[in-house]
Structure formats: structure tokens, C-alpha cells
Length: 318
Image (tube, rainbow, N blue to C red):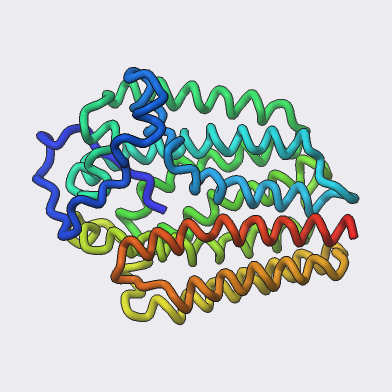
């Protein structure tokens, strides 16, 4: 998922996207209608108007909590992870927008974001990011020692991800390392240690991210060529569909292995089967040259996340 940005259109060339008019910020939405003008750029910087990224960051953590549970997952932990995913996704978007501000000003889909459009300055964005990180730290330090160590350990991954699209065609892999860290953190928050099911869940999540973020990256492939950044969409090109089946198939196998290692009962396999069918539908039906369809398929991963979570919980409870 590209979470990027840039200072001002005056500081870069005119946007050259052939699909102009598809900016990802929609004027007149709930942010414009309900929030004071001074708060709107910060809500958009944190992507509060586009919550799918928060869901994709949250689900691995919820899966880890549910997988480690004896029966029902700990609802206090679910709530804390929900708040944590919201603020840490916002902090990650803010960091990426700062790092990518010169690129985003050249991309039609991202040129209206708060920093490229001049709605807020880099210094204001840095202050906002510090606030988000402070809330995230408060949540992290309410957990056990192992979870705290894992939460601190992921900071290096978070800091390096925004620059990966400049040096590798597989920034989606590094996003997977970041976005699925919650699988380890959630398990550790319950168990106080790590175990094989958590590592299998994490590995499956990385392949899941490779799939959905490759679909997402196809929205920007023309712009990425023009501005000189890399993505798996460019690396795979016309071979994307078979690789989506490969990525999603590997994710399903690893998630199944995680459920088996955790001793989940038969309802888990129903949830996993339904989630796998949803992923297969994406791979079979996505139109990689249609940005609108790519976005629809990308957003549909929220359903896959719920199906797997339901399977994990049912596998314990039933």
C-alpha cells in the first residue's frame, strides 16, 4: 500500500498521471462536513477518511490475540489493539507522506494530500506524528514485557519502509513485515512469549500483504514509471494474476498450519475456507488495468480478515 506525500505543487513538476481526476481525497465527505477546518488536514494525514489500511493493520493483531486465547479473545486487548492500529497506521502514513512528499506532488491520485497540497507543513506533520506515536507508546507500555520488546523492535521496520520503493521492486514485502507484526504482538500480549502458531500466522500475513498490496500498486504503475519508484506491480506486470494465486495460496496454507499448530477445532477450517475463496475471487477477477477495480478488490480484504478472525474464534469456542 503506498502511503505517500509531498510539500507543494510548486516544488515539483506538474502531475502527469493519465488518469487525472481520481484523487484519493474526496471533497465533501464526512471530514469536510463534520470536522473544523483546522482539523481536516490532520484527519486526512492519519487516513481517518480511508479506514481500510487500519483494518489491514489491525486484523493480524486480532488474529494473534484470538489464536492465543483459551476460548474467547480478551476484549480489553482487542480494544487496545484497535486504538493502537488507528494511531500507528496514522503515524506510518504521516511518516510516508513526509518521506514521499516530492513524489506525491507528481501523482494525480496523491497530489491533493495535506503536505503536497500545502494544507500543512512538514513541521506540523512531524508534531502530529509525535503525538500519534505518544498514544501508541502509552498503549504498548500497558502490555507485558515480551509485547513491549516486540513493539520497540518493529520501529526499525517502520522507519525503513517508506524508502524501500526507491531501492527494490518489492516494497510490498517490507510492508508485509510491518503490517503483520501484530500477529506476533497479539500472541505475545496474551501468552507472554512467542510460539510456532504466531510465526506461521505472521508468515501467512506477509503473503497476504504481497497479494493485496500488489493489487493496490497497480493503481499507480503509470505514475511510478514516470517518477522513478518501484513496486511489485511493475515487477510482475502481465504475470500478476498467477502470482496473486501463489501469494494467496501460500497465505492460506500458512494460516492453516497456524490453526493446526494451535489445535483449533473444525469450525476454524470453515472460516479459513471462506477467507481463501474470497482471496481466490480477488485473484481471478481483478482487472489490473482498471484502477477503480483494483481499489475495490483491495478494499475487499476486510471481508477476508473478518472471515479468518471468525474462524479462529469459532475454532476455540466451538
